[in-house]
Image (cartoon, rainbow, N blue to C red; front, side, top):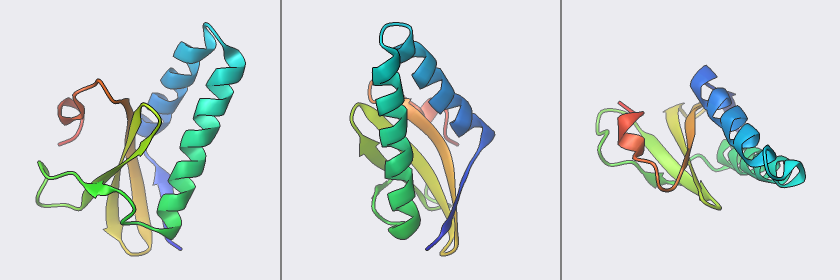
Length: 98
């Protein structure tokens, strides 16, 4: 199983998602964040679970979906994965990944 590390930016993304949803429904915010976190844990066991993010060709950046959110991550090697960010599906993640 690969070690999964959250970048500071990814942790901030998750916190922002929680705060945005919690403004209307705190329990829903907790459920969404827990679901995203659990999906990321699957990536540790199955690093190629997500689809390759093609615009970045020089590194293995992949993305997987949880609900309305895309989880972007980098496979550094078989034992190390970095979560790069969590983005609402309507966002242009290309602006954030480079």
